[in-house]
Length: 500
Image (cartoon, rainbow, N blue to C red; front, side):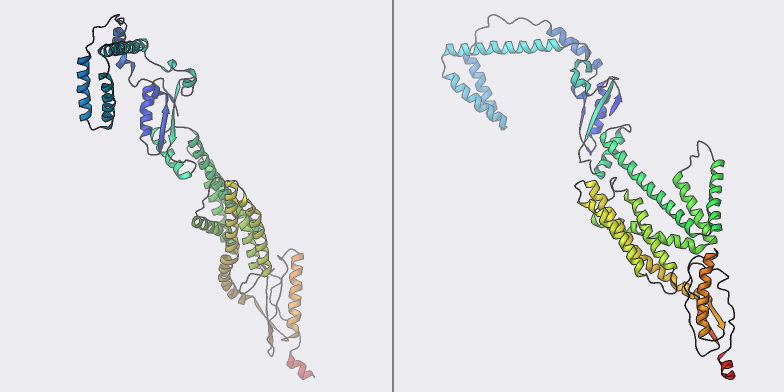
């Protein structure tokens, strides 16, 4: 953490605050090698010490006569004091002193005097040497970083004079939770702190936010594409242009430095307005669009639940799956919705649709699942989340969505009663001819642009009556000229019997 300071004291105070944090293991800074007191507080003391040590006397050439008896009695008193102390160090020292006194008492008096004299001279020489070293370093000038070795100083002080304080975490910060706690603690002391852990924390958060925004943008684009495909031409243009003009006018009106537009908010507002206006003109198409989005959205929710149960989590390495799962899962929803629109009455998923959804999903799961065997943990987690996500979309497509469409088909079956045509005429023969004629009319309506696709017609003939009842089984839309009820010319069965 660089700080603009040329003194050690502010850095030492900052380091002490870091050391009090529970997530900090240790702190390193150059202030540990510098005096703890400021030069103002120590200047006079250093001067006095330097003045006194500059006048050291030489060692005496001769020493006064030493009395071995007096020294022996003093050592005996010291031995008694040590033996009275129960501390382990005191007992160890008393044992050493006792053995020395035993050896000392066995010596001759001249030997005792010579031994004590040499010891006294060696002690005075060592003491004078220490004083001389103190005199050499007792410089009244304050100690600065320039007095340290260049290689050591350059590790903590920059050429501009910035001092470095290195803070080490007490926990393993490669995990997200300990890293977040460590970053929060050090920023509570210094908001401008920097370093590798904080770079990793900010990079991971930025990647997570970017992938989440990418998933939201992908959702908006997919919904718009589905609405453009499902809405009729007139309703589509009104739904697309009206919100765009409203938002553009609002942006022009509120243009200024204090009104920076948020693209994510504007995109969400635009999609919601398009869907709302489209529902006014063509509600079934908007409803089908939202139903087609159920597998990817529901699949992501199921995926989050399964990952939570297994102890897995999203991380910067696998969050890219969110827009991928949206793009893959919407295919399953579109397949099922197309199958629903081509059926009448009670809805049941056709085998061809089941095969298509299963084939596309399983092949994707096998392809992405191959990454689970990778030794790189990021790739392995990416493969795991993709397999779980695509499998969840498959489950919602074949279980949840068909169940919801079955409920909607119940209401649609009631509406089909209004599509029954009553044709007066022969009950059997003319009804079959009428069904064939209506089918031909449906195909011809496609050729002249008034229809929307091939129409399948089924007949329900009630024999024994004056009229035949034909139910029209149609696609998403039928040209009005095709379904207009008309009377079929021909003789009735009673007329044929009377003529015969």
